[in-house]
Length: 114
Picture (cartoon, rainbow, N blue to C red):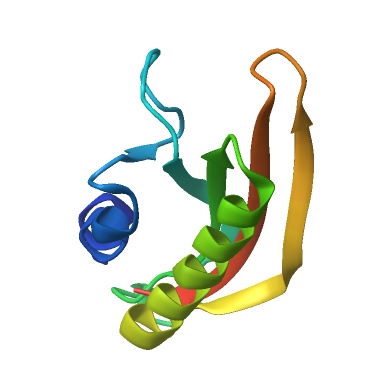
């Protein structure tokens, strides 16, 4: 199994000038940025035990001060992950309020094998 931490950043770095982080962005990070994390998956097990191939549910979160930029950025994320990792979106993107920061937060889940 290839860890997502080695797969995801190289694919998404160009979209936000390298501001791609696992779980949470460091305080003071200029926007826009992308955060990724595991959101579940299904273990692949057969009679020989746990398979080397893994199925993961990956959550991608985009943060921006501009809603149009956040939407375009998420569409770019979908295209990048689909074309490189064959990651399939699970549903559509969801906008979540970020009252404290006043940033636009768009989240989407993906299913992928790695």
